[in-house]
Amino acid sequence: MSELTVDFQNVYDGEGVPDEALFQKWAQAAWLGEHPSEVTIRIVGALESQQLNHEYRGKDKPTNVLSFPFEPPAGITVPLAGDLVICAPVVEKEAGEQHKTIEAHWAHMVVHGMLHLQGYDHIEDEDAEVMEGLEIRLMKQLGYDNPYEAEETEQDS
Image (cartoon, rainbow, N blue to C red; front, side, top):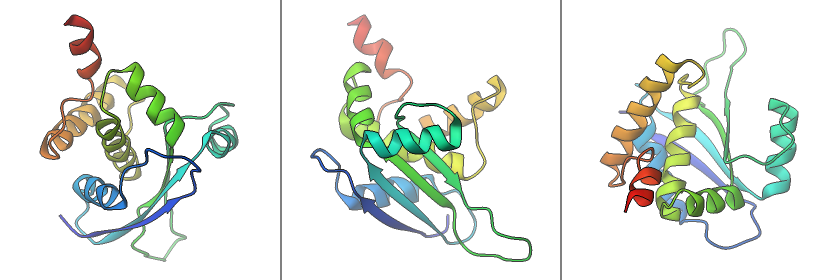
């Protein structure tokens, strides 16, 4: 595992965002690349998330995490993974709805986004299984429960 530099930008005007050191830890754990790289993690409010989601995905609502992989021009090699834009209000709302701790859900959003930056996706079922398996393993390594079981576990008890 190579080193990952995190450029942390918190422009969210609210409370509850975990410490920058946690974002570094989560992103580093999810960096599977063989070479050092850099990622920008930007924490935003609902308005910026909605604007970016609308512009880049055609969905006019805020979303939990947007991933923007860096695509270098031909012949240029720059050690940049890309950018993650995480919407604090959506993460907090989802954590409550899914009966997860806010910290665990933040960690999952970083891990999920980092995997997207590395080419993983969940459009096809087979790809989703691979990506979710990696997310579960990485979250466990970080000391968190399976992010896909938290919902059912809480509802059963």
